[in-house]
Length: 272
Figure: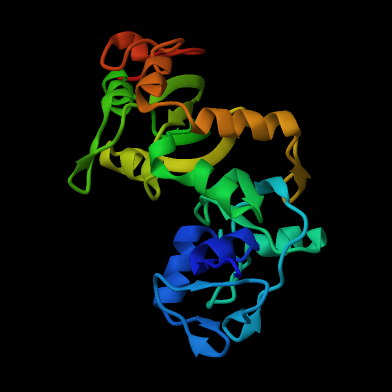
């Protein structure tokens, strides 16, 4: 008897989208099976059934891709855009297969973005419960006080919910501009920008420099590279850590959240 799988799993496994995005596509009526509109919870046999998205039949992927992309500012983290804006899909056309983003970076942000056609991998890495560390280099104006640093490190009330404790330290001070390193463990939409807005800070530049053990390094803007086997193994291992292990890790080099060592200044005078 043919083996059937949930449609969202099939779409993710064949590089169409993440499982969560696939569920949105199904709910929006964009997916058909043998010419009939599919519904949430439907299953299919990818070897026998004709599965299509927006009228285009999906082609089964035979090779898995795991990419690190340096997203430039001005590109949206989608595979296509109804407003005809530049999409990250344009930057990976040379792959010859459909890969999609793991998580997001907003249009005005830049830096490391993972892309893949492996739905199970994407789900493990991007699921909120995994708490994989994401590191950002953030330039803010007009300066920052120790109180503001401590609020970032302990949590800020945004849209009725406290942000999770974060690591933060000052890397540079350049007149009325301060460069911060911020490490987040949750993936709320535009979280850093909203935290800074709540503190009265303007974000002049936001660049993601690492996702777990994977670092952006010297990768040029708009370029991509394949992840090494060790990077893939390390990402999967980190995604399987328990939440309490992640919380303990946060106290290692930056100090325990809530204490003054949780937010540190380096390279210049403190601004109050």
